[in-house]
Image (cartoon, rainbow, N blue to C red):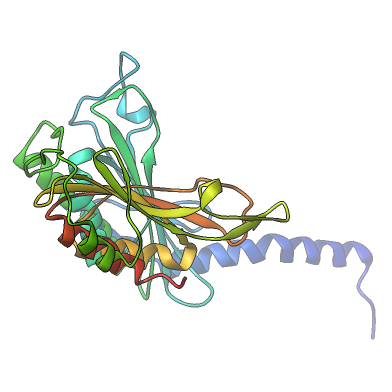
Length: 305
């Protein structure tokens, strides 16, 4: 058998190296029906050079001021979602949506109703008026159009809030409790299965989590804990707190809190390098204290402790 000259082999390898990614991107493009995504999302999708389909929406109808500057939406107030086929089958979506405070809960509920995950909720600026938050999403489905419909539902929920009230609200609906510090602590302790500790007119419940970092054990004393604080009176209170969650616990906890009517106001990390990795969720709710405690307990029950 006659061997090929070295230069011909070299050319063959170069072609293989360049054609493999090209073929992969072409396959991605073939799996992603741009028109179907555009129709499902209600906005035109585009394809990137590396085989990702993207849609976008600029939040330019509500003027935002950052540090005294009339902030251009193109400088960081854009919402987007990106779709890519995955080797295991189906399509994944990642994205980021700009939300004002009164849009957070409706947008989150729409995401959950369409099988999407919330992977972060935080700020990108300070001294912004009105405050703008960023809700990061993720998900996986058999086709991109299904995911695009979920993204559209999120954006439609936001638009619905703004159509009903052009100027973002500055508080949640419902009355504010009078803080007397009088609670049925025994009833709250029974529901939460923990001892409440008083600090002035506030009663707080803490649930330790554990991890390790730098070879040392971490726990409540170093800030690794879930907690719930009640402020108000025996019939009407606010509960606020923090859930410390492993990755697998994040979505179940969020779903349980929303099912109980508690608002999720932040989702982020507090540490880097701990094992296992923890994520932290901050929440807020108003109502009858025992009902609020039942919501917190429902979320706690989703965790493997």
